Length: 95
Image (cartoon, rainbow, N blue to C red):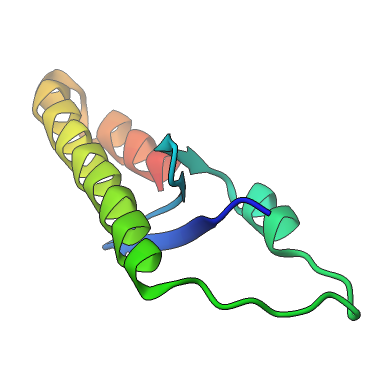
């Protein structure tokens, strides 16, 4: 099986889930996709992720999340010409 790490990040109302594989860049996934990937059979044997791989994959996910935060911040600056109601609707949709 391929090693991967799923990480949930939260900052304020913003929640994002990322998945990383050793040989691929991290990508954002939705909650249901994460649940499907983590689903196992009762007979399935547990495995331990090597510590080195864990921290490498966690770092990749963290960098992707931080980039996403920066993009959100840049979007918020361009929203200044929207009405307060429009800004609130966008905030709710992003959360």
